[in-house]
Each structure stands twice: as C-alpha cells, then as structure tokens.
Length: 265
Image 1: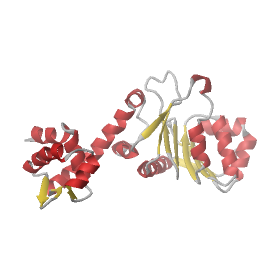
Image 2: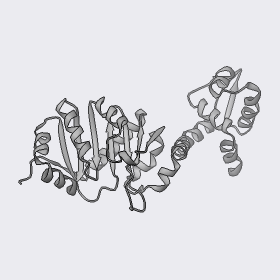
Image 3: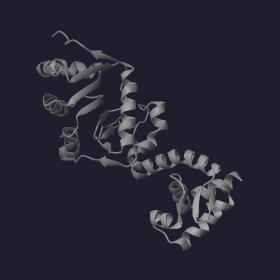
Image 4: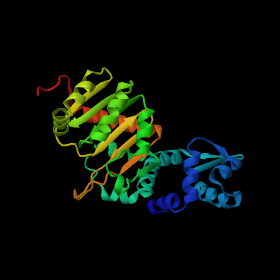
C-alpha cells in the first residue's frame, strides 16, 4: 500500500498538480481544467484514481481533498517545493557548501520559491551586478551578512545609507578589522549614521553572503572544494524567501555582538 500511494502521487504530474490545486478548497471541473491547462478527458481518469484511494471526494460536480488527502498534501508541499528549488539550479546547489545553513533554514529551503542564478562574466568578476544594485537601491532596509571584504559593495551601501536606507551588517572579526583598518574614514562615517548597525560575528561565517531586504533575498555560497570563489548568487523575490532570509539573519545575530564603538587606530 505504501508504494502504491507514493506512485499514485508522484508518478503523475497531473495527479500531483491536482492535489496541490485542491489544497485551496473545493473546485469544479472548469476550474480544474483551466488551472492545470488540461482537458476534462485527461483529468477524469486521474480523479478516479485519487477517489479510489480516498484522497479526493466528489459532491455533485465539485471535487475536494478528503481528510487523508489534506494531511498528505500538507506534508508533500514542502518536499515538492524543495525538489523544484534544487532542480532549477541543480549544478549550483550540488557544487556549493551548505554547512553554513542552520538546521531550521535547511528544513525550509523550499520556501525560497523560484530563484534566479546570477553568474558574473569573468571580465566583470569584481564589479557589482546591476540587478543587485537595482534591488538595493529600491530597498528601504537591508540585512547583510558577509564573510569577505568587498570594497565596491561596501562603498555602494555607504552611498545608500547616506540617503536613508537602513542597514544592519554582520561580519566576522577579520572582515571588520580590514574595514576599519584600511578604510577608517568610511567606517567612521557609517558608524555615525543612526540608520546603520554593525555586528561582529563570533566564529567562522560559512556562507559567503546573505542579503535580505523588503525587495529581495540573495544568497552566495562557497564551493565545496574551497579552491575558488566564483561570486555566483541566487536571488529570490517571493515574500516567503524574504521572510526565511530574515529569520536566518536573526539566527546569525544570536551569535553576534553589536559594534558600538569605533576601534582605536
């Protein structure tokens, strides 16, 4: 029975999509065929199979999930979302080190939704990506955790901070030291702004970059082999991605302390 149920749900894309569609409530055949972009002739056999396994019930001309169907769909949604996330950019995920993700973040990865892979050209490897620039410029607040010193990004964020954008930066001690040692005046300016906060991360930050704002979510991971850092980013726009990113940033804050004074030269 276990194998039959798994095959019933996952070996037919139509059945899978139908179950997910019915999660929002009872639907008639017209609504089903429109949402699944399929004919009633192709849908009816799939509905029959789901009814035979007591996952879908019919009342007059309306179809809905049974109690068992509701439970299964609630559990299958996160799995399907995570599979789709990995499938869309499989090479990226398979080559990156995911150890920097907290257990709670890994469990909710599917909530990132549709993500776009940003791959810089070799001749523009150290320049700011224009899509990232646009999104930062349109943001009112930004949470950013960064494990390496990227002067162009820091300078750009400084310009935005002067215009009123709120920033919370989280960095390991080595990055902070590089900032206030080599760019002391810039660091003083940022520390003087009421809309900017710095946090010193205790320990090794194992993600290259995390940025979350009211407009987007961005993640950049180190490769597994640590031989090179290609500066590839995944950018997501779903509200659930921004929420998940904010939760992850807050987790990182638990292992951080706010920088309230400018270190002595």
